[in-house]
Each structure stands twice: as structure tokens, then as C-alpha cells.
Figure (cartoon, rainbow, N blue to C red):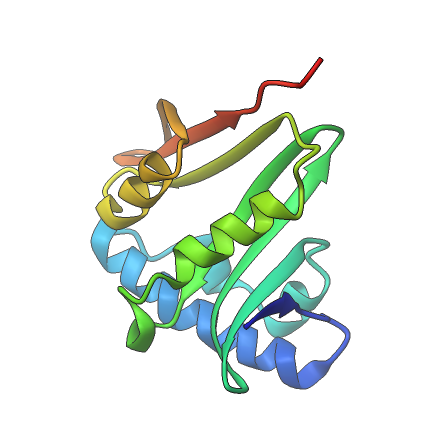
Length: 154
């Protein structure tokens, strides 16, 4: 089941913190970069990040989460995390569909991932996002940016 995560509840923030650490460690290995900001974040910083979170729960276990921010008609996916025990179960796909369904008024959806994170790149391309370019954020580390533009109905 997918539901909003309330970052004011310390137990769920701790669970989310542990989930994101497990997930981003896998990405860090894929892209050979261990300074990913969420890996350095404290529980307090996570709680105060200002992002909106959707959680995917298996029974009462948090198995995946997606966070996003909204600026006008633009939605930016900030984090997409799935616990490694639940990879390849379609959880990221379901979270992505849910954020799109709940924000139909957004004209543009944006997301970024490590250039070498092939599974994430494939997920976004499969879901209608277009690759818009790579940016070297530190020497030797490239981030791939994707967008999905929606046509407004007249």
C-alpha cells in the first residue's frame, strides 16, 4: 500500500532513514561514489528536508519511498529508494505512477540519477521521461537528468 509519510513521526523517520541508507549504498557502489548527499544526511536533516514523501508499505514494513518537491507547475523527484530486499518487485514503478497520478496538474516532472545507475535510468525512460543531458557534478561523476513534459489540455 502507498501512503504519505509524516516526517513528524520519529519512528517512521528512523525507518525511512535506514531505508534510504540501504538503497543509496547500492547506488553508491553502482556509480562508484560514496558521497551521495542522502548517505551523509542525519535523521534530523531528513526530518527537516522539506520534501513530500510517499511510502510503499508491505504490511507495515516500509519497503520503498519517493520524495518530491513542487515549484509552480514543476515537480522534481528528489529521492527514489527501495530496500535491496525488495528490488525488482515493481515498487519504484508503483511509486512513480502514484506521484504522477496525484499531481496531474504538473506540466513538467524532473528527476536525476547517477549516469552509471542503469536500473534507475531504465525505469525513468520506460515511464516516458526523456534524457535531457548529463552534468559532471564532481570530477568524474556524472548525473543524468530526465524530464517528462505534459501537454496541457485546451
